[in-house]
Image 1 (cartoon, rainbow, N blue to C red):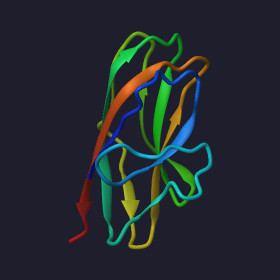
Image 2: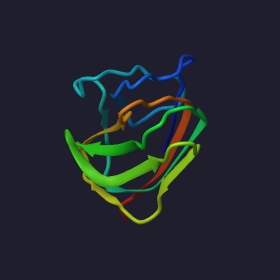
Image 3: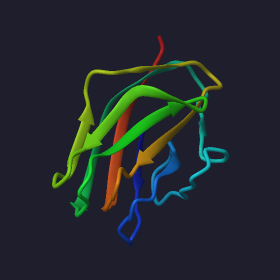
Length: 125
C-alpha cells in the first residue's frame, strides 16, 4: 500500500487527516470523517517511511496512522531541518472493516511540502 501526499504550497502549521489508501494527489481535511480508507481484509501495517522535498519549519512534525478514528503507535517524525522519517518497529493489526487514515501534526510551524509517504500492508494468512 502506497500513497503520495502532494501540495504545491508549503504547509504553514496546518494539521490534517488524509486517507491511507490509493496513489496520487489526495484530498486533505482537518476532520477525520471522509478521510478514512476501508480495509477489505485482515493483516498488518508496518514499515512507515516518509520523505519531504524540503523542510523549512522550525519544529518537529509527526505523521501518525489512525485506525477506526484512534491514533496507533505507527508514526514517523520529521525533525527540524531534515527531510526523512520512518517507523521500522511498530505495527498495526487490521481486521476486515477497519478504517485507516494518516494524521499530519505540523507542530508549532510546520513547513513540509511534496510529501511522499509509504507503508507495508501484509495480508493475514
